[in-house]
Length: 390
Image 1 (cartoon, rainbow, N blue to C red):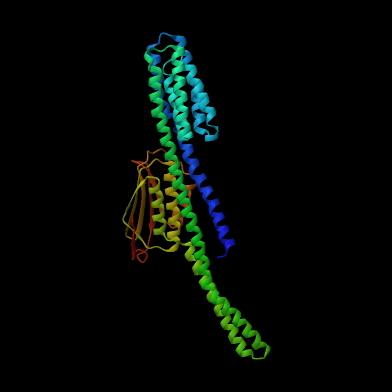
Image 2 (cartoon, rainbow, N blue to C red):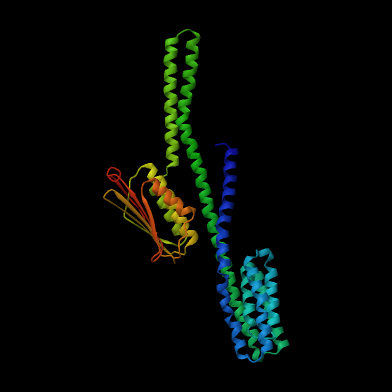
């Protein structure tokens, strides 16, 4: 392989890596934004002081109204990149500072800002900001006149702990990003190696045959020129045989590339589930089947696994294979919380593929999702089994 071709493969690998990173990070980011409200439960510490001053309607009203800009800045911070995080954090701190004269629960608002500071910025910057905010808490305490210095002391402690959690979460996110990058680099390298293998196989298959075809053609041409037509016809016949043999070998090679095998597909999908922290169990044996059955089942399995990863919250999955009386039964179940199934293109596609194989497709939603594929198999097809390896 020349340098130009290798450079093209490396560049394609980089593009694939960027696309994969983007496809992986975006769902995680969307999920975090959807579950962001959970952390707002910590605002209970904001409401506790309001209970003890429930007779002061003005202070309670202002304190509750200030939650509007705070919640807005909170979700804004969740959606922000590091370069622009200063704006929602600034609004959050401004809201907390305005709320401080009305309620000591403003400490909890400062803690939210401390978390985002620890998450978005470097440790040195975060520590510097914590010192500045600590000084600001003492200043507010002096201006407002809280008793016994509990406002700055508790505020500093809470900001430090919650800010440390933000730093830890930032480091965890960086580690996950590096792991995704390493996985993408491995996949890109595997793709480049597979291309090299295909090129090498085609060269090994066709190199000798094409040389023989060229040699036979040149020899036949010279024999025709010398008038030795019977011998020329013999070489042309051999040339046609070589060409047919080459075409057959190419078709066989391409067919092998297209058909990866159902067991390999199942093992790959099992690994994908386990990467998502989903425990997988495989029970029974998977029979040897015609290429059409294996290719269609591979597509069905892929659709079921993708649905589990995208739409479910499963922590455990079970594959179960059984064949009896020339009937193959495949069950895929998980322990996700269920809701009514509305068949989309994915499930309709599975049903169509099963009908193509003269089988049946059913599912239940009792104690998790369970999808059942039943296919008829002849005795010859199930005579030889191959085990499913976890």
